[in-house]
Length: 418
Image 1 (cartoon, helix red, strand yellow):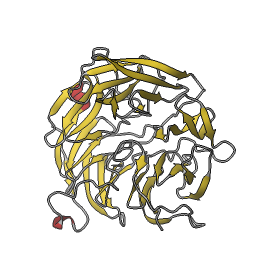
Image 2: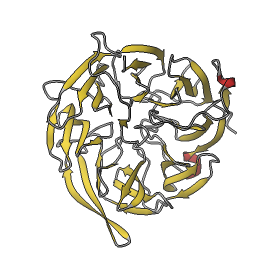
Image 3: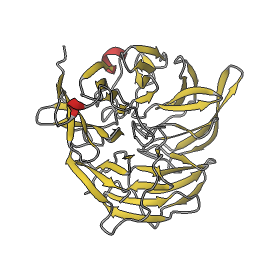
Image 4: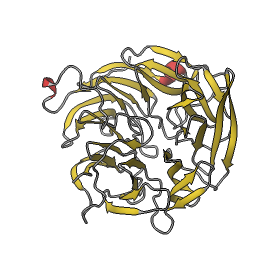
C-alpha cells in the first residue's frame, strides 16, 4: 500500500474557518482561469510600468519544471518536487507574501525528463484537485492540505503516461473533476467530495492520453467537454459522458494545446511539431452532431506548440509558429491579421488577457511584455525583465492585481496595480 505523508507548516491556519471562502470573481482557480479561457476579470491594471518593471512582492525557489499556480481566497496553490527526498509536493502559500501555509508530500520517484513538474491544480473553497506527473489524481482539503481521496489513472483506467510525463490539468466544473484517461475510458467525471465516478466515456478506439486538458463548451445548445487526441478533437456530453462526435485529423508526436470552442458551432485545435491547425464546424442535425472541416492549416502554415489560443473579439491570439515565437492575431477563417514580427519574439512563452491587455512572456529570456488587445496591430505598452529566463513556459495566474509566474527554478509574484 502506498504511504501518504502530509505536513502542515506556517502560521495562522488553525484559526481559519473549516471551509475557505468560495472562489471569487478575481480568483484564478484552475488552468486558464475561472472560465478556462485564459481571460482574467481583473481591472485597474497599470498600462505603463516603472523603468525597473512591476514591483516584485515575493520570490521563492521551486524544483525544475513548468507547474503554474492557481489562486483562491488569497492563497497560491502549486506543484513542486523535492529531489533530495524523492517526494512530490503540493504547496499552499500566501498570495500576499509567499509564505508557506501547508505542504502535501508523497514519496514518488520522478527523474528529470524535460524538467519534472507540470500542471495547474483545480481549487475551490473546499478542495484542491491535482494531477501529478505520473497521472495520479489527488484531492486535498484546501484549508489543511490533508488528503481526501486519491486515484491512479494508470491503475484504475489502464492509462498510459505520455512522453515527458503527464501535462494535463484537471477541469473543475461545478461538483466534479473531469480528466482524460485513455485506456479504459476517454474521459471520466469524478465527484469532488467523494472521489466516486459519475460517468465514463467508453474508449473502443483506444484514444490515448495527451498533454491537452479537457475544455468546457456549449455546442448546438448542448454542454460538452472537448478533448484533443493525436487522432483529432472530440466532444463528450457533460450530462452523461456520451461521445457526441469525433473529427479525424492526425497530429504529430504530442498534443499540448487544448481544443477551444470559438463560438457555439466552431472548434479550433492546434498542436506541436509542425502539426498545423484545424477549424471545424460541429453542427447539430437532429439528434446527432456532424463535424465538418472549415479550414486546415498544414505543416508550417500556423500552429501553437505549447499554449492554447485565446478567443477575443472575433479573433484568435497565440504565440504561434509560422516563424516560431511570434505573437499572432488570426481571424476565424485562418487568415493572419498581424504578428509581432520585427518587434518581439516569444519562443514558447505563455500569455493571458486582462483589462484589455495581453500579458505575454518571452519563454526564452524571461522578459514580460504588455500588449494592447486590439485587432489592428501589435502595440506594445510596456516590457520588463522579470525572470532569469530559460524555458519560461509555465502558464501565469492573476488575482487581486498580483501576477504569479515562474521560470524553470523560481516562482515570483508581481504587483500589476502599483
